[in-house]
Length: 321
Image: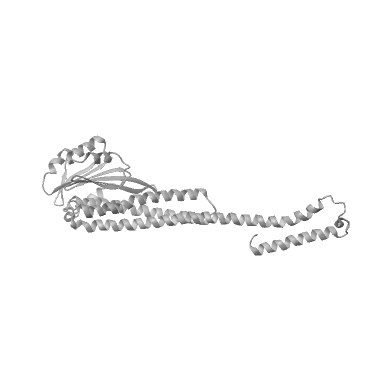
């Protein structure tokens, strides 16, 4: 469950330290600890609470996933929840990362589907000048890494939408394609709900928590806000296009049904002519002059066929058949 527990001083790693020694190391000046945990149990979280003197309510939230993205302040520590997203077998899976941040520590707790933050730590260690600014730079690096992972997810959802869009315009009504569109819309909503709150979190960190986010780090968090805004705009655009595609597909289905009804109505009108004419001969009239005429039958049949042909040509020109 413990991925790493490393102490840093002036941006340089002091190596791994035992969890039991955290409280003692925190007393050393110009030193901060970066603890990484993956799906911890209750006993480990209680130990972390004891070593870092974390608030009980924040620990209770960290024990359970499915928290909403947020930033809460508890005495001298911050509790941040951020949703993560990644592609697994071409399916979008969401997870959570809980972060405890203080003046001299940062604790990352991963729940569910989430990429390891080991590359983030390695990248930070290659920049000791920035890492020397304290846990604020580590916090930026983790959040920036999470935001960067949203981009390939958004791109894949966009590609999937384009594939479905082609299908619904090339084919007639397909219930399966419409179902996939609705599923895609649900994934876009989840991604939008994951990305959106990060702007508020970054804004609060810049404005109200100078003890964690120093002035030198503010441009980095503004860069996160820029990335989030672009991803949010892209997701919103796909959602609007998806909604429009569904509406257009349903409109096309309606138009197709109207065309069928028009053709049926046209053929019905043509068939109505012989139906009316021949139904007259089915009536038991005693005096019917047409019955005694020598050319009555061919004239009636010919007149009926002529009327049907003329009506057919008229309906063809009108586009009903």
